[in-house]
Every structure is written in structure tokens, then in C-alpha cells.
Image 1 (cartoon, one colour):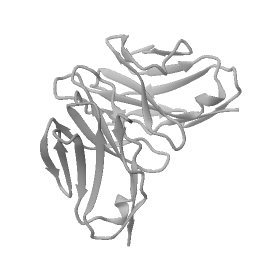
Image 2: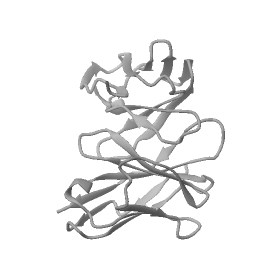
Image 3: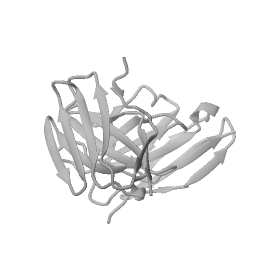
Image 4: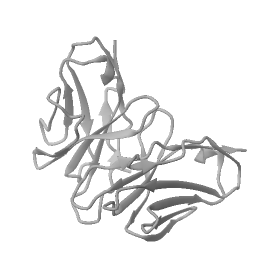
Length: 115
Length: 111
């Protein structure tokens, strides 16, 4: 069964450092997403990406964050100058383009710890 | 009022029981309703998806949407210990891709 894959599974970084989280979405999907889940809290939407541009973003997704599709298979989330409160599980997700709604498939997550 | 509310549990049931999981929401613009299962420290796994009101069945799972009450449910028949996980409801508005999640209900199925 096709799946979204994410690397790294866990990363520890020092406050103020830049982090890049990587994802390989499901191959025939054209919408890509990043969500995050702070420990013990709900899953929160960060950004959606389609046709090489951001289609939607939340208030959380400020100038500290950026996304990129550097090639035909990868989708990345960059967090500049990480803060302690950026510690969370970051989920990449993807979905098909279509009018059937939001059947979005998630990866296993990248656990980011900022120290 | 939170946009999506979900009882955090834990909900503990014996193996074989019928489980009922619920969410309420306040935004009447939500039209797409999803249920995800999440094991500890893993990604959400899509279980069921429904559009607008009505019921949908898939194996042991039944999803119900009552838009007039702003209430959605997931029923699990013949629950198994492997069903022990956190169940997340999620919703979205037509024309938007962002999902709004509930906080999740932790389910424990005792053998």
C-alpha cells in the first residue's frame, strides 16, 4: 500500500538552529501538507501546497517556516531559528486532486526536540 | 467554544463490545468529516470519510453525521485489543484543504 514517508524520525536540535524535515508523498498525489502535534495536544494544520505554491496556511505558519518541493518526489519543511516551543511531532501528508473531499494520508511523523 | 470537541477518555471496554466515539462541532460550514486512528507516537491513519449527513459503513466501522445537531459518531463493532488507540475526528470546509482536528479519544479494549 502506498504511503507517505518522512525523515528523520527524530531530530534533536539546539535553539536557534535551522531544521529541514523531509517527506516523500504518495506518488500520484498532488496536494501536500504539513501538520504538527505538540505532545498531548491536537493535530494542527500548518500549510498546504499545490502546483509548486502554498495554497493555504495557518496562523502558526509564520516567516519562521517555509516549504519547498526541490524535485519531483520530495517535499520539505524548513524551520529557521528554532524555538523551544517548536518541539513537536511534524506530520507530512498528501492527497489526490479531486472533488471528493479531503482524504488525506499522513506519514509516521518526524519528532523534533529543540533544546 | 472550541471549534471541534471530543471527549479525551480514556474509554475502556471489554473485547467484543460495541464502541461509540463522538465529536461535536460549532462551525456549520464543515461538510467533510473524517475519522483517524492514531497509535502512540505514530501518524494518523484514515479510517472513514463521509460527506455531509448520513451513515457510512466499512467492515466493523460505521460513521454517522448529524449536521442538524453538529454531531458525528464512529461505531466500532466487535472491538478487538488491536483497536486500542486514540481516535481523532477531523473536519473541513468545501474549497479548503485544512483539516480541523478534535483532541482525540483514547480507547482501550481489554482482552
